[in-house]
Length: 352
Image (tube, rainbow, N blue to C red; front, side, top):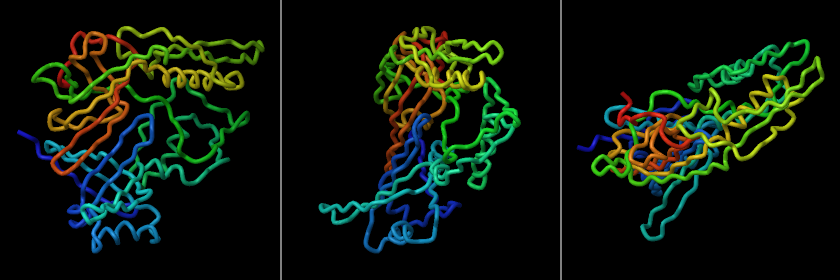
């Protein structure tokens, strides 16, 4: 029996509230992209009539004093509500349809991180603070929007002494902060080629061992005046192996200007470079949420079964695209990992 599916749409300036019924009646489709390595965004399509309330709520909002028009989409599947997007409308367009005699209003935007890229704070000092403490101070500005920081301390702490140097900010608050967290409870397994147990529509894999690199950073010894090269392996505490056969990096890189950094800064730069290029296996697939049994989410682990010895095992869900229409909910997804062959004796179907 199919599980009931409900889409709740909330919108408003800064604080979002449920939209009026005419807006829901005009809903045609939604496309939401969650990504761990790229900006997340959304696109909503509505039927636009001449007397539609959308003319006032959305089209005229461009000339209103409302600085931020926030949109929250909540999907309730099998009784469990999940926020699949919390973002801000950036632009909209009207698409006339000559065959049907009506127009479509297409509204698109990005997640709340777009608000972090509005005001440059270049020159703002952070004396005596570690990188993770600086991130906490930066994110505190967005607490009013419901942003709750989940900061993992740096593997190699770097506490600057104020009398020697004071870190200052460059640009806006939007910046890359550390690798993805690839640990935790996995989602239900994706099954392929398992007859009645198959719960995906398509799934293919690509193996690219040449993508892995070996960064070499240079650490300056201020006492002896020597420069020590330090290679950084592709497997680190931030990027544990998700398989047995981790390929040997085929390329050596030299992250720039590490000799002029502190040892902690140089090591973290090398770790970031190694993690960024460590994924050698990429999986692309599609599924029907009703068949899968729940909503697949990005930025977490998921198991794969039935793909063969080399590709079975745990993967990190790098991105998910949600495609919703009345009576239909499908997803396309991208999986990544840094090794071949599962390091688990059995891939469980459910995360027990």
